[in-house]
Image: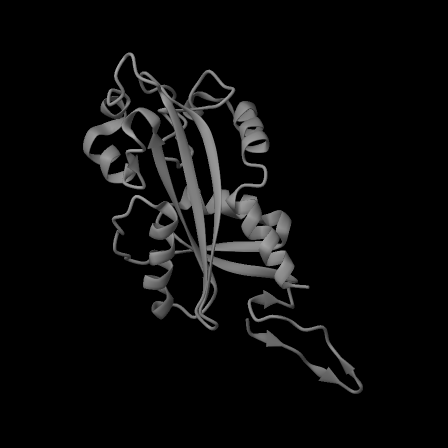
Length: 218
């Protein structure tokens, strides 16, 4: 971690990490994604930690792995030589119990090829519809070579058919029913959506990133 300090007379100002904007008293991170809705969500999640988020688009090779943390970390290492400031990526895997975890991080090409309706039909009528969504943020600092990963997971079920219209920028919103709910994320109204965020995203990967960044300021 690189630090900065300034001596004035006999006093030395407090040392802070290099990514910490001393004028604005906030950290700024680039979010590598082409999805503006993800950037909006990331900015909202990290605001309470004094972190501002800006969008940056890069062409990165899609990593083929069943381990979503490995996918995110390899993207960080791809992007590192192209950037100068700290940044992060987010990747998710959709693990269907009846399919032994398939499709995992490969959910995006599967959804693109099959669509919501066909993906829900991958699970047989007598099979468990239990799923786990695992999301990982990988953070990178090109100046120091630091790479960190932060994981969150959500339990639920895959819907028997797509429901709802409010995607909110999330690929799985029409087919994922969170544990404790009886409708998909896309079918939740704004109040219910906020309750979902409060209940199910407490201490998730965004919180873990924010808490770690705060710890670097000490």
